Length: 168
Image (cartoon, rainbow, N blue to C red; front, side, top):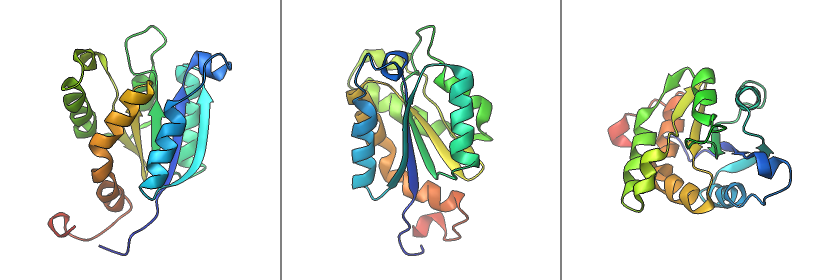
């Protein structure tokens, strides 16, 4: 593989209360710290309400305008009436990557039976990877830990990396 590349990353927190300043966002900053510790360049962070159209517009802007390599969302993956993050993500991606969501749910089930309610997905828009995580700090950290070691390879291939998978 080519020399190690630094990929850009954005963390998008979906929370009605957080966007109004009624609740501190702990998952977003925790994810920023984890991703920076893994060598990602965190170039965007925002808290927005659980509004599907706004989520879609933000994801499209971060991909199309800012060209962010990896976008992590936190929140809006459950079954509350306002939880629309997976639907928003599906509307903007070109290709779903089911293995990431499956791996996170499988690992989460070893910690809590409530993991069956998580609907987070992952997918590609253009040359960016979008991953939905739960909104609690603990669940967000535990979920990203499951897939973080696989992300560099996926981003490398997504960006046109030519090395054979078995060689990486």
